[in-house]
Amino acid sequence: MSDFEIPDLKKMKLPADLKKLDQKQCEVLCAEIRQLLIDTVSKNGGHLASNLGTVELTLAIHRVFDSPKDKIVWDVGHQSYTHKILTGRLERFGTIRLENGLSGFCRPDESVHDAFISGHSSNSVSAGLGIATAMKLSGSKRHTVVVLGDGAFTGGLVYEGLNNAGKSETNLIIILNHNEMSISKNVGSIAKYLSTLRTKESYHKTKNVVEKALDKTPLVGKPIIRAVKASKKAVKNVMLNSTMFEDLGFAFIGPLDGHDSEALENGLNAAKALGKPVVVHVNTIKGKGYAPAEENPGEFHGVGSFEIATGNPDVVLPDSYSSVFGKELLALANKDSRIVAVTAAMKYGTGLQYFAKAHADRFFDVGIAEEHAVTFCAGLASMGMVPVFAVYSTFLQRSYDQLIHDLSICGTHTVLCIDRAGIVGEDGETHQGIFDIPMLTSIPNTTIYSPSCYEELRLCLRAAVASRSGITAVRYPKGRDNSLFEKTDLNTAYTLRRNGGRLLVVCYGRLYDNVMKAAELLHNEGIVFDVLKLVKIFPVEKELYELVGSYDRALFFEECYRYGSIAEKYSAVCRNVSSYAIDGFVRHGSPSVLLDECGLSPEKIADRIREHCNG
Image 1 (cartoon, rainbow, N blue to C red):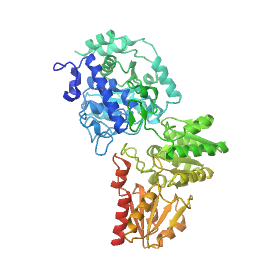
Image 2: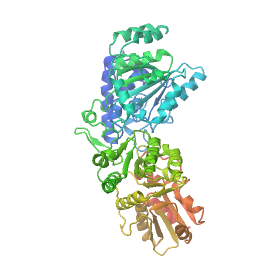
Image 3: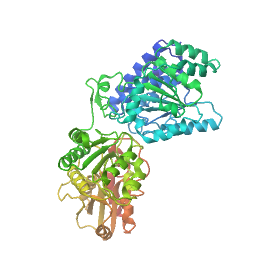
Image 4: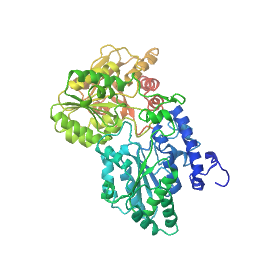
């Protein structure tokens, strides 16, 4: 840039000024961005390793393409922090994942530079093809750039998108960011295949393909040809008839060094000039530039706050619902050789590391493939095994058809251990676990438990494993059990606490502790009510319909979406039911604040009860 030698993010007009930088200035800028990422994530938590690995790549994309005229689609979006910094959100970057701050994922309502909503994996190729097709139909010559990691290639939707995109004759460029990690180490044949491409050193036919395409590009083509020739690291190969991508109709460029800005720009310019669907294979190092994250990329994939000097991340603690589940499942598996554990790239997140270490032959990480996981469990169950699928609530949504067709109809028994059920907090709308109850209660042959503390979780897991038919789900929240209620009469059915009132408050899961705190708040006001704590929340037993119907009024408090809630099941039979659940999507923020905003904190629950008693 002409105004200054060392680039200053705060003084730049972004992203336009990025094109004015030379390569040395790009290196300086990347170092500055990395430090900003480390400083911010150390305070706010978030996805660190993946973002450190894509700094040069993101800069190269914005130097070669013109966002928002060219559309950039990020798969999952957890690696888009640098993209946010470079597209006018620098001043607000310190608010990322905080209440009323920037989202940790891409949101079109946050910026015109976010072309598509993100949060879940493997949808970017399909979305990008839709955008590219719409641009083609409108006569636009602009490009659609899709950025996805090799972890996303373990999800089946990617292949549905690739199958349609390769011969689409659109200006679609798919950047495969290969770091051999999603959250856990990537697994399966596709991971091995991509690793082979990562080290492939074939240069044949590069000249014929790239130069022929670029030669037809006026003004731009010749300089790019010279640049490609000049840089040995720029475009290592363009391979014809040698990868599955060519077989699907794509041109293929790569592998490129994902931390060599010049090579990346030359490769992307070559892809841009081809005028057809292209896959650009980029090799990056997850956690690049921060030693603790490079050494332990899994631990630094998604972290809470951490100490920069030591690199000690605030990861899932032994004192958490996930770890209690994992250890209890291991204890059960030690006694029953039929128990098999399945995860979709979430071994550590779901607490299955204990099981995996002790029973490696009965542990299966299927990658980011929840649909496959459910049907795989159905096959296991059909042969007498007891499959336990540990999965985040938000990711279980992908497997709705398999739950119905492959499990429910046949009546085979599979245990779903649904982690992160309810409000999860800082990851926002795409990750809140508020739809598993409406989803699962619409499926026949399904039983759902919702424990309110650790010991109840253990009881429910034992009951779920012991069951011999249908889908049995145990849902529990993120984090530790902070409940203070009296742990007596714990069971897997329900507990009724009678206080002599004609008002009944009904709840389940961690909200029971909030209800009991609300009862303490109201005690001095002389407001009394009975409390029904459900544990087996579905299907509803006849005696519970009768019990709820015997009160003047029954108030249901639920940490799930209102429509399809448990209260709706009761209201179909009982006319005295009032429902307090969650309306619509829930933004990002701390769980305690979000629960309060949803009317589910002890104080807000007390307010609702007070209104009914005083009304």
